Image 1: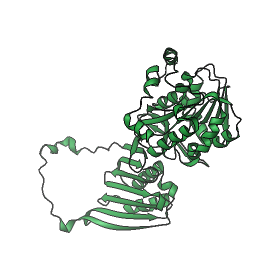
Image 2: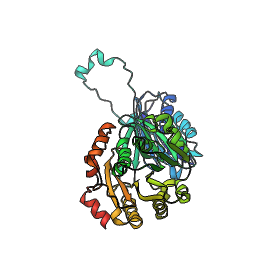
Image 3: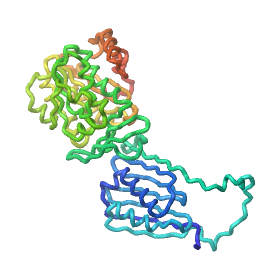
Image 4: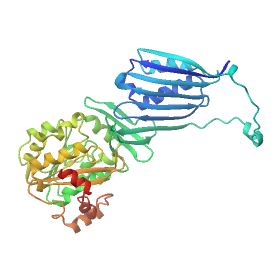
Length: 427
């Protein structure tokens, strides 16, 4: 032993891109590498950076193992530092090379704190010489694994319990459910938050009850997307509804929600619901005119299979399918997080429904980046979401159904836009 520690700087090339973007897999691999090398694990902290990349560190009693990945380059940089010679960092190297499916790896070892260059001094530890301090105490392992939803300028991180509850890479997207500490079970698609058990009611109550309490005669409803079931659950609270058709492109979302999000998916087996696993864009294109009183576009962000749900052609078909006094609501992104899509969708809808019949409103959802989220209310027959609201009826309904976010005052206030948003939409 001629140094205080061994430091190995590692580069792995040609790794599996999927593995290098998988936080639970990477954390599990790093913990395995530490344990099999003979280290005593103290804590682990890992973050995912949407859409690509993972950073993390496993703190060991003998120092640390750290990593950052670039899945788009199939490359990982790893830092293995062990104090003393009881732990073998080269064992960790071989394990991680296999776990990441690397085509090849390279490493350089540095001796840290070479003893011939150091002079040991006597330290008076005073009261620390108490016999209790010399008892061997096994460190308590703590785990800190984070999910991050971000763009190039803004990020939202949510701590979860580390292991995924559900994971499937469907033909359309990657569907995951995490068990978070603060928000319960959380559904994500392609590393973007879709909903969580604790705050999903803000989204689902506002996208459904705003149109349905403005127009109490709604009987036939079409939902595009909404595979978690939250929108259907809220629609079923209105007894006058006779039929609901839901078109969800990804069966994996429905299956995951049925099993792990029962508080959202409780209505998916209701006899009023016709569930279709298919392309909502094609479904609307081939639907007859004047078929629905309400169409709800409960989509994910405008990437992947949901990209076409933000097009003019799709909304022209939606307009055609609505009855003369029909309504449409859609999630319309965040005016802060996805400003371009937010503005473009609003102008697109104005061109189709007419500017006087398109109204933006807001809800506040903590697990969505920036917390502020937009919705669009569109009327084929000129119905106004505030002027035509029967406030007493809305208040009675909210109380009877024990709604958690929606009430008559929130309904009205949601359409009072901050000045910067109104300016943005008028520009």
